[in-house]
Image (tube, rainbow, N blue to C red; front, side, top):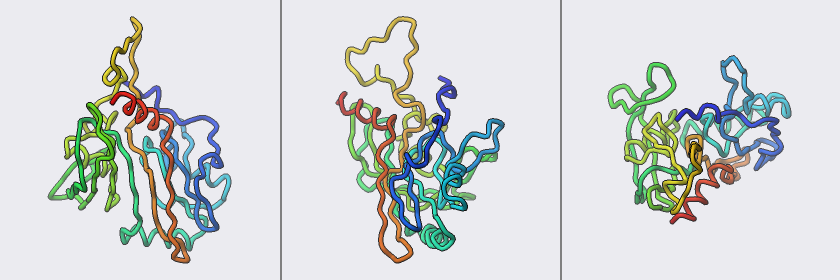
Length: 249
């Protein structure tokens, strides 16, 4: 199924509506899905988080990135000192991040660590496990809740490689829902709801039309060493998906 027609950035995005934390050094937003972190080299020149943020704050900087389809907590630095402070924490793996994902299959992960090296494919659009040429990557997984055919999983990345969580879950035979790049199947209401009736000659659409991954929590130190911890509420589509799974237990 081609879902490209649904994968468009929301219109008229207001940064003020996305902010979930702000002080004199940092802004943390709840990034919507389908909005790139940085400007893309595409003909349509779609809006980016950095572009929107600079319209409000001037020379603000992104401290890290999220995949275009991933929603959740994204940190921007208001000044060079704040940017350097967080860059050093990322370099020393001191920033703590927690993602939530809905995956295919019923799994019971209890601090399962995947420690496998990752290398990008030649076209740069995806990655693979490569024990010879890959860079080491580690992710720890916990099952939050299991359903009849799916699981909600908490993902703790120790390193920060491209598509790390997605490919590591594939290695556990638990690919993320709606992630065909790494073997994840679509999820339909008819799969989980009893007595589901679809109108004749109607195409059933997936419950979520993107990779079901959300950056839920981020924790780091401010310039004065105080700890900043921010929780990004689930994006609407992710929340709807989890609620439907809860109803269908």
